[in-house]
Length: 245
Image (cartoon, rainbow, N blue to C red):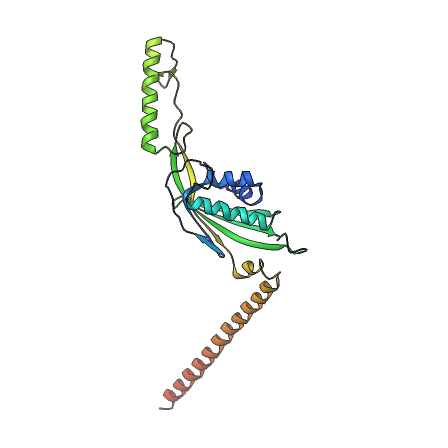
């Protein structure tokens, strides 16, 4: 991604809703080969080669990106028709972190008449790589060296042929400048517990957990009331005892 804030909606939409070929291509394009993935129900530690070249996920590919691709594939198999909506996007440029608040409708194909309406926050740790001349696996040093070489060759060719055009005082054409692209280093989905329960309990678990939360809230209020009452009585007795002396 060259502009994460503007591109992330399309990236997530492709990963969750598009056909298999587009989905897998998006994983190859946007995730590093050794990317991590964290979800309340599964976890993929990062492992594999470190390059960022777009390589097809195959049986010979051994890295965590292949596992992540399989998870997205299975997710789509369980719910062939997923609807998502991105509510807001926050970009921490200093730390290269992207936060996406979103909602989705997830329906298991073998459970009729039930759709889980779930809200979550996606946290993406991105890694910036400098690319140039259309090659995603070029380092900044390689790009700079290639640009300098191209620039020198163009200058020499133009001087020899006399047909070069002036660009910033130098004959010839300008090489493609390096571009900063962001790749997903770590993907973590944050769900409230009641949102996770919607996947398994047809909504009843979410309501039950909501009642549990209300009960815990009542316990907090009751505990504070008891403690404050005890402290109030104790302080009152102490003041009364001091006053009688």
